[in-house]
Length: 515
Image (cartoon, rainbow, N blue to C red; front, side, top):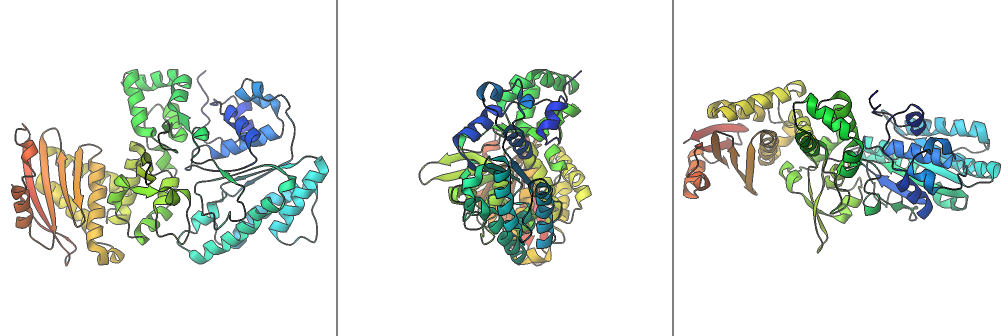
């Protein structure tokens, strides 16, 4: 019988009892519980945070039998049982504060039924205080508190300042209990996708140790290359055979598609566990992470901040931006990084600047594809097909064909973008050519105000110059004058020089000339 892949299984007990495959992370879990007591971890969605929380729950409940054969069974000699509060804020939709309170209320009720409640308590934070005290008094042990997806309500309210402030006030009071009840608490971990600024939810929790960018815990969620090769050798061989590849080709394809997350400058690359397990289970490569839905708050953020998408591929930022998110922040980069769409590609020690980029092909292609219907009139169901036709024209040397398709991508410029028409052109061109570049070779040389582009296929080279409210003739002249085509003078491929003009009045390409 083959491996049972734990796709979508977030409960450690179910995983172990059900005979599902588990990559042993328990040595890191042991380090976590023996070296500190208050932690915070942010990782992208579908990265195994919930399973980590569930593993900690089983460990603190003293369920020794579940850990047989794992690293911690050699390390842990005591196996003590602690009372555990495990809260999960992962609701599909929070419409208002009452939904958040109801969700916490339901989870507190279960524990209060077992450990008792104080009738005079009115708010959820008062009940939280009483519950911790009761659990401690009843068992004689300090309490373990695990919160999964602590930021879900805040993320859903991005762009709605008033609602976000209401959620923040509730959560701030609730999490503030951890500080006031310190003497009763053995261990606490909060996980989420993002880290909302210290000034907001965690302002009272200055004792919270953030391990999101700690090199000791880089691989606590996700799969490292060593773990991949040690645990999935047979699976890679089966995948290769199923897809007509050699073992080496399959390894390279897995790396290109799913590796490349760096949560610390210079750290080893981490593979997306959800995509990897799905690939092995189904025997084919796919955009599995994207099939589970990309949050629309990201697009709202990009648009409302008038963000130039070109920067996605060349973003430089500071630790301060990566480290926290605030509703007041005018910079969407922190959210994009923490959500897993960008990752650390390089680090400049002085002045401590991070260079960011897409982690891998799955993320780049999925994200660009996702953006198409938000920036162009192409419908979501059609976007993959529309881009594919565009690429076919590029590969076939059909200049008029792909320029007409480009016009259709630029048609119906959204009203809110009309004021920033130049940014809109650049964003649409970036999306379309970035997707094209996954199947051909595209280079941009951009300075503020124009995009020069070189697209190369097996048979053709396109040297393109774009003008805004100038003329296609001027654009072509510039290619000639500056000899943009010189690198391809001795090339056997056919070289097209294309001058393109955008007209801000018609909000589209009005002419192009090909030479």
